[in-house]
Amino acid sequence: MTVGRILRRYAEDGYRDRQRQPRPEGTRKSEADSCEALLEYWSAVTVHPYRQNGPETAAGEYARLRQLIERYAPQGKKIPILSGEWGYSSAWKDFDELRQGKMLARQWLTNLANAVPLSIWYDWHDDGQDPKEPEHHFGTVRNQYDASGQPVYEPKPAYLAARTLTTALDGLRFQKRVALDSTEDYALVFAKGDETRLAVWTTSAAPHAVRIPTAPGRFRVLGHTGQSLPPLTADSGGLRMTVFDWPQYLIPQPCKRAEP
Image (cartoon, rainbow, N blue to C red):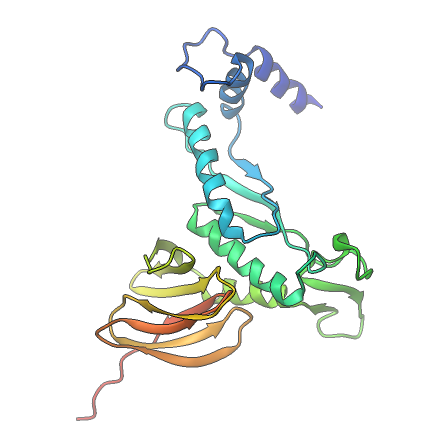
């Protein structure tokens, strides 16, 4: 309650005597004042960008929100965007557990590529067992608790996707998106020192071949739920591979030294 009163007081009354940049056309003065006053005290802006299409579509919304934050934030203050709640139900129309798992991995990768450092997935476990109730099926594990099981909750593909991503990219930071022939195709580079790894997928429903510009070498390949896939080899023309609507993690392998 105290926090609410303080926020409201500053939103309504604070800093009205400060000189400001002209507010955006169509924005009321009270709205502009509120934005500026609140960002004095906020450490981050959190969003819940739910949707039933691909998470990659949130990139434009993040960019527009970041422009607003930069306009109203105090000079020199960096305010990040956080994904405070976002999930996909495996009981939505045209969804199932397999597609939900794909969306989790793509959502987290999309957030990292858009400078969103925190992703909170909704939900940890399914809230019920009604197959026709979408609210029961946002979880990464199923609803039934089995005290004798190992683990006690049965993982869904979304759980495996989360575990694989956090393991494959552990300690690495997003560096860049590699430009491919189609904007539907994604190749993200993550690095730590001299170590690099790639996450590659497409938003197209149809698998197809792509060429990724990279130095010659061999790659170990993990599917988005942790399955080992056949290794790939890049030559002087880059890496040719088939992309799917789920991420593949490419891990460069050390070059074998020639026998003396």
